[in-house]
Amino acid sequence: MSDRIFGVVGLLLAIGFAISALAIEESFLSDAVGPKAFPLIIAAILGVSSAVIALRPDAEPEWPALGRLVEIAAAVVVMILYAELLPELGFVIATAFAAAYLAWRLGSGPIESVLVGVGTSIGIYVIFHLVLGLSLAKGPLGF
Image 1: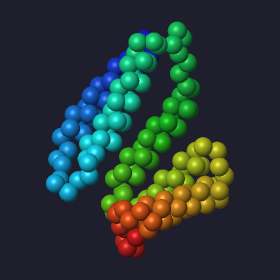
Image 2 (image 1 turned 60 degrees about the vertical axis):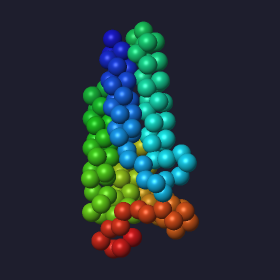
Image 3 (image 1 turned 90 degrees about the vertical axis):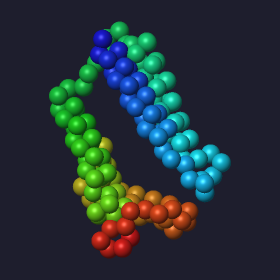
Image 4 (image 1 turned 60 degrees about the horizontal axis):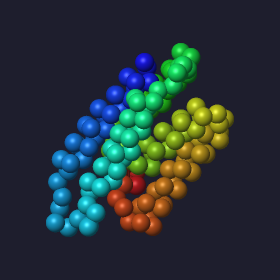
């Protein structure tokens, strides 16, 4: 029964995401695909995946132990904090902290986690901002 509930919640989330994507206003300067395409693709994938989960659930799903659920909840909190702090801290700093925490929770040691976080942050910044010219959130240090 829990798989069906999870699938229905996912379907509702996909519908809400699609409605939000359709509300995006298009500029006359937008490209041929437009800003709605990517969110609609994500909503479609989420909807199809959720429908499969709801219609073909596992016979005996195994839920993680309480400790694992707490770790999952902590990762969700980190991602919410990342989204909230991105405008204040900037892309590079916020991404470094979030990536370092997630790398640590995935099994890296503390020093490796910091290196992964900083490397991921700088690597993405170089590719998306310097190479592709996309604008990213600027922090107090100007990058």
